[in-house]
Length: 360
Image 1: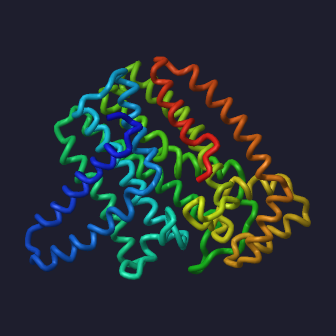
Image 2: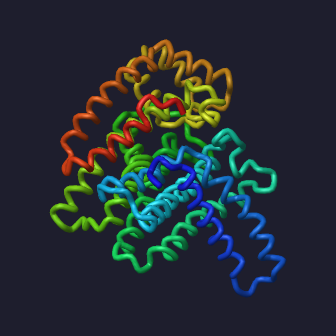
Image 3: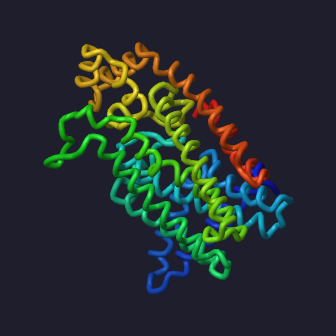
């Protein structure tokens, strides 16, 4: 079993799901009827929201442990790494269920968002997001309570959750609220400086750094030692660059990728998001073109969205992104080549290979 074995990884997911459903069965002071209602509901919720993505975040933990051990993992090591990997996927599920509600999204991974399911609605989905988060800590306690890095692993999840929620706040308030509704559009808020801060917190830590840091923690690298500190810092430095590149890809795909390929309907324009595209557009527009943004950006209107996308094409932002992508690939390659120990480079080559030229 290796980091490329998705079937083995999914088998570990099934074990985790079974344990969590058993936890519900064992809840005290509830009637069998109520317990069965809960079991029926979460037996649908968990597989609908947790698996189903590319699983890159989870598989990266396994790859990291393989790279650091420099050998084939034992069955116990593989299972531990896979369990940790699935907790990153659970964290992703928690974020996505909540994010889809906040963004009023329609689809996710080619299916209706969880809150859009007729028997779910926003009321349940908000609570479900919280339960998905709690399940992470139930699973970590079950499997790692006696592990020497247990506290460090817990702190990584706590810190990453907070960092991502800070990023989510910045993202949601690209255009702030006033008197219970969106304030008038203020294009001066859409700057690359704000964008980079948002991306660092919303994407880089949980989508890239967390998986790498969990591998380091599991393998016993102490961030307080000289060697450990250098390894964690190297991981953070490269993950911040990979994460920004990944999010800019995401913004471009949100606007231009067909929904059937992307697996969701992009809503960044309607939601007045501080995206890379609008930030770059504002650097390039004439006053006349800026007026198109002022009139149409942030409006839930199909014709307005079409006009914004036409402006993006007129400004050749897709071509600009392609140039950026090649430059970023070179920057990442150069940074990775400087990482020591040399075997640790393989982890970041793995990550870069997963996102370079991705289409969804």
